[in-house]
Length: 367
Image (cartoon, rainbow, N blue to C red; front, side, top):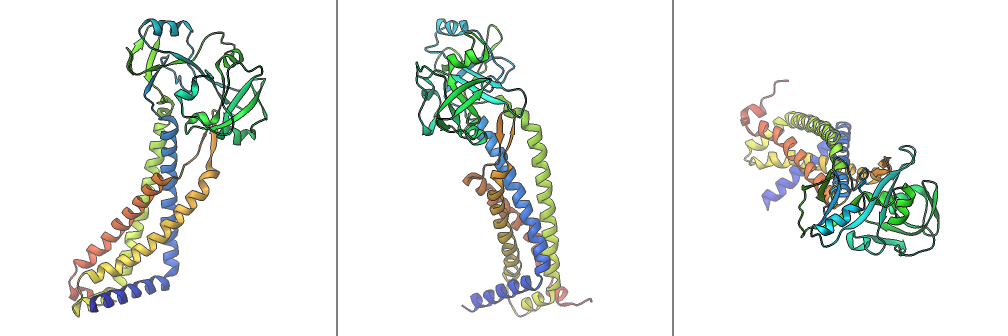
């Protein structure tokens, strides 16, 4: 009980010392807040890109090689579907994936699908309206939530796609880049693009004669459904951002460690006297630990709150795709782990430095 009371007193002294030096603590806290904010937003960006462009499914796609076929760029003749069936594939479902527009500002993803089969291939979740139907007399479409928000359209509105009007009959969520696109019946997409009977890809089962990575005649490639190669183009940029943020984090840890060391050195006589009267080394741990945890905990919480608030405002649309940091439980858990790492590293430096000094060195005043 006596030990607990003593540790409580030491904790109280540590907090009072923080309050007396509030200007220094504010500067250090701001630096930690900005570090946690940057790291959290970076995790949010990379996690969002991985989730939206790497949603591999237990199906394969046959597409033109050297393209990002599931996103755009692939165009193959309808005869490929017959060849796949003749080779032993049980089913080959055609789709059209393209980007339309006159510039990056008005670019739009267009997906042409089989109205009777597309729900079996992707987990579309209609948030308003209904799904596509076969044999409708007018041009109909469903739009992703990102495109609906960006274009300001909803169920019953008309969306103009490459000079043609489509009636929006539904708004969907999918969790992939297609939330930035418009989905129409494949025949309408082919007419819209002037492709005739050509398609972008064929979706085939995994239990057939082909495997991901196989090449076929005519410059065709078999790939994993949902694994869009476009994300690889962002690799160097993300690596540069990651390096920059971690250098910022390293600088924050270094400055925080020096500041905590300075605070401990200012109180070296007090800490030495506590050691002299018999208090164990954990008294030092409590004093420095309370200050480090209090400072980083408050600052990290502020950084996380700012990240959650700023993430929706950081959405940017490039080449028909909106990228924005997604702050979910996974990202918050990683950010909390990073904040804990900052505490451990920043605390270890002054703690080891003070604990290794003898009591006589601590109580000796040289000022």
